[in-house]
Image (tube, rainbow, N blue to C red):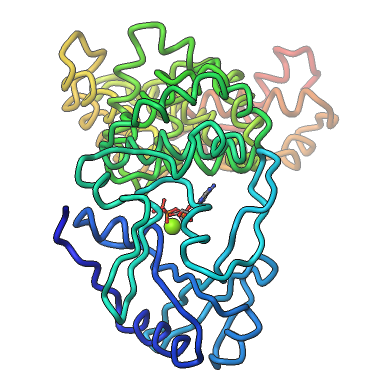
Length: 427
Ligand code: ATP
Ligand code: MG
């Protein structure tokens, strides 16, 4: 059994002491305890207590009512951190979409409603003892993921637990215990009943993982969850691109989950990627951005004519250069890792990126708005406003992208006259 002991921050011990002096048993539970036992830096230290929210609010001066109906109060410590403290709870009834809970009297009841044994280890921050009725520590040691209680029941109570199993197994390199794994397949039809938000947040957590998200994504695929939730991606998995896509996702930093999402969606048609994002109820802005990045055309090679770079910048927007180049670089590196014939070496991508940055730095006109003449000037030429204005301005931009020096009033007016005459206007 692991000899590692969680070291709770002083504020956690202070909260524990204060609650216990008030007569309320208090434990730390969940992710922070688990991570400490794995020797990883602990994230949020969550506490579970016998005290009700009202009691907590009386015992502490600075509190935030985060989810009082669910028993959760935020306690602001002197170190400036807010700790979530939740009244012991037990599952009372479930609908598969979330577990419905009520307050409970003991830590044991609270641990019984938790999803996996590794997440159901309680640590007493001041007495420094464990409460580990499901042997989560031993499972951590042997790298096993198991549900607390009968897997099929626990998954049916809240189908999100299936996705959480895949995520935790991937994140910590755990083997999903046979019974738990076997319960997943038949229950997959319950997944689409979850809200889009919960499915999305799960996927984003997978993509925000420090360790390779590919492990969890492969488990999505193997378990069949991918086919149920993301059939478009399951089709990719059937082909040779999948390995490369996952390697590219891994190559991107965990701090950029949306960029990783774009890498994952890369093999899809842009409309298909957009449809998937809409289904996940991502905001319109994010949907556009991610789909656009996923479907961006490759950067022109470093030795391509400069006009191609300007056209690329005009088409995708100069702000997309960084993200798209990062995506291309991740793909090129993934190809290099896996062997095979890459479209372009990482070095060539870096060179293309550097070159495009230099072009961008020279601030060439890239949009109709950047042109020195506009509708007003066209009217002064005697042209009547109408849809052809847009066509003329687009034509001017096309010329200016070829030759940025043309972006002077006289030159553009002459060009505008020519374009207008071509279109049959009398100017
Ligand atoms: P992470 O590092 O991803 O935040 P975590 O274990 O802290 O991991 P949370 O989603 O923050 O995960 O939940 C905190 C704890 O609450 C879990 O460790 C688990 O004990 C319990 N829990 C969370 N979601 C569920 C669920 N759907 N069913 C049962 N227990 C859950
Ligand atoms: Mg957490």
